[in-house]
Length: 82
Image (cartoon, rainbow, N blue to C red; front, side, top):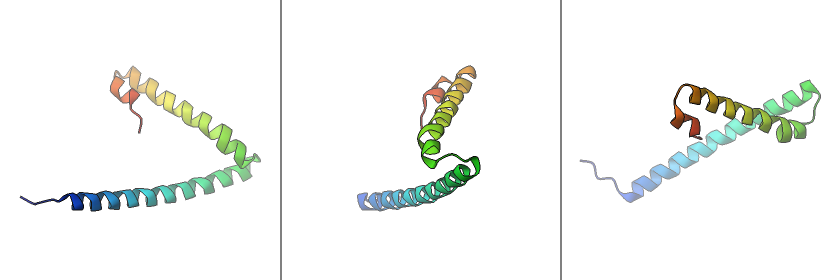
C-alpha cells in the first residue's frame, strides 16, 4: 500500500487551488471581454450591465433550474448550490 503523508496532501491541495485560481482568472478575463462587447453593441453602460442586468438574469436562471428539478422530483438537486 502506498504511504501518503500529510505533506503530499498539502502539496496536492496547493496545486489544485493554484489551478482553480488560474482557471478563474481565464474565465473572468473572457467574461469581462464579453461584457465590454455587449455594452458597446447594445449601447448601454458596463456598470448597468454588470450591476443590474447580469444579477437579474443569473437569479432568474437559478430559480428556473430549481423549479425544473422540483418538478422532476429531484428535491435534493433543487437545493444544491455550486
